[in-house]
Image (cartoon, rainbow, N blue to C red; front, side, top):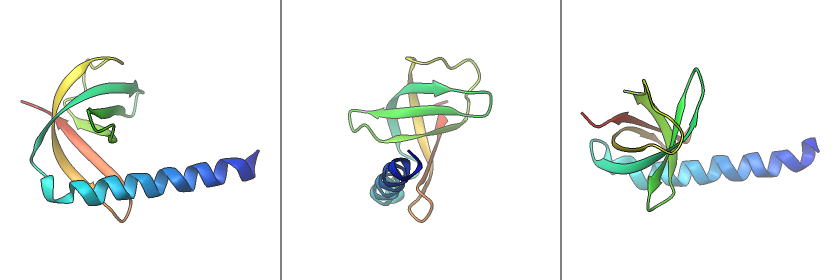
Length: 89
């Protein structure tokens, strides 16, 4: 089971790095997104219609799974695969 998880994890990291490369010149741009997960430490999003996934780091109070939100890209780090958004003001 551990061996099976590693290729999936590696594929996910590569996918997020590719998404971040594609977005790195779009910092400050607005996107439509859907909340896909909420934990005490993070709120996760998927952009419509691209399916790109990222984290909501500002304005996450009160977000629930399924909420549609306008977001602004804050960070797209291809080296680490980080894609962070703020809720649109």
